[in-house]
Length: 165
Image (cartoon, rainbow, N blue to C red):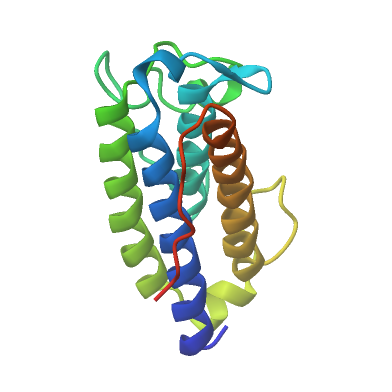
């Protein structure tokens, strides 16, 4: 992946994070626990952001979750293997998590080289290249952002398309 393509992927992930931010910030308090599919709104947002964070790491082993009772991942990596996290997350926490993901996006993409991007994803369950992992990450984030945006529109909350740039 050349530098131009890295910039494009970074820009698109950033735009998807902006759209997720809009969904989280516009979600009415009365809808925070409402089901989006089979999970509460907040959990869909949390799940999407967790995987942005994880997949911007070099591997499961290199991911450094914020643990402890007030951390975003109280039980560490174990949070990802459970259907529900060990606690509920509030809007300010998830908005802060978006900022952490943005910072990590800048750092991670700046560290990528042609060799690292052509190499393995770093996640055994994903047998494609690291470059494809970034596209996979974007697709996963956009999928859940779309779910949340569609849900908000159904309850009368408009969300906007975010242009990359």
